[in-house]
Length: 385
Image (tube, rainbow, N blue to C red; front, side, top):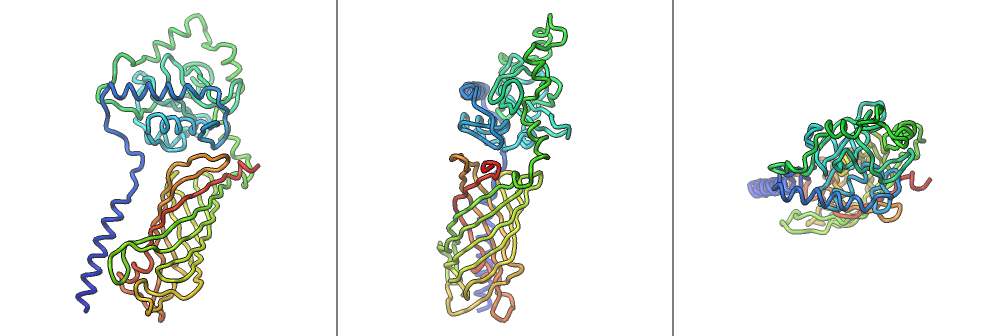
């Protein structure tokens, strides 16, 4: 009997390890390079598609389709036109890009700016060639999606670096631009390098970075983000056999703080079909980037649970430690003021025998390890004010 359980535990550990490895997300994996012809086609498609949005207004936190913030515009243009998934924020887009010199910059690359005094990347635009870039501005003589000159005025002073996501094995020489030569040519006859509108722009800055500077003046509530998730739980084994099992449904109400660090707090209401009881997990969370969240907290039991597959054996929750998990979500699709995304999480709830002693590893996992797939709706507090 002991050998039988040892073999079952071994099979379980092998299966879990394989599944977890298969589910590890690919974070901003970049292509090693496509042909020069294909890369040029992607760049042309990106720029042509992005130009269609010139004139769309700026809105903090928006990623389209009608309004954008600066990083939201670049994020949306890459995803919708050529299917490249960028991080959501300017500094993260920069961190994951291939760094290139100014003389290597070609149309379809990205240009980054430091605008807040913190030394961090805070603004991003799409380079168009001919010393121009396309971006979404928050303030100044022109706002929304506009074309600006890279080597003049405010943008020249706050330019930081260039980066590349559309990579080719052999860069097309015909489209390479030497920014210094073009800047010298275009500034000829204009000693200060500024036209009237750019001088005005220097006084009234049209960038997301200024919005980030003003962010410190926002009230606490304006930086709160609410989300609600509905999920269906499942796993692929119980104490009797390996098979796909429906583990019930749960709903999560959660609020997080959208700062440099993104902590949150939430409460589940869950019916666990495997153990046959209701649960009320209360969790603290921490966002790891834009698409990953870890959570943990105590679990309040509502009812008496049993071993899945063996309803004659009663078990009990461990209130603390109670539950620990990790959740991934897809990029949001905007629906009015809300954002909608798909979610997938893996969580483990701790159960013990009724006398408080530990279950065997296999029975513990069969009782507490659940995968949940669902839909999340997100609503920033700023959209309610």
